[in-house]
Image (tube, rainbow, N blue to C red):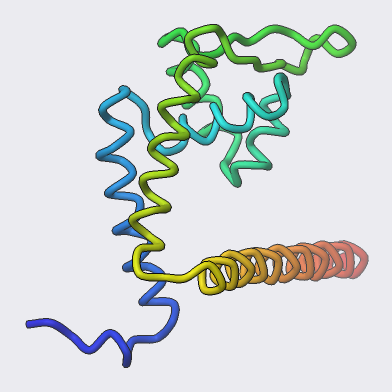
Length: 163
């Protein structure tokens, strides 16, 4: 029995759509023995050429342990290299290998196919509006997170002062 999607809360609808998108992307990336997170790593390292694990975790909105796990798999697969930073040996710098660089074409192709599928039946204005709205939603969430973090830090400081 199909439910009326027009009556679903936006959060539920977003969850359903994101789940469908991720499942389809997962199927497509499997052809290249990659997952969605690894594709994101390839994209960012291709754009920046080199970055720290901490920077990458922040950009991908992943926890440091998740990024470490992803990076280890990719390093084992020959997609990326890790080396200590020249100025701070505690920081690991990441870069794409030749194999990683050559894989970017495939990842971009999948991205193009997914966008074509997602935006099917939409005109250019609707596509641009959708993109703008996604960016706004992301910015709203980032702003709220900053406020929550500041509030939590203030609360902790206030509580410590009382003790």
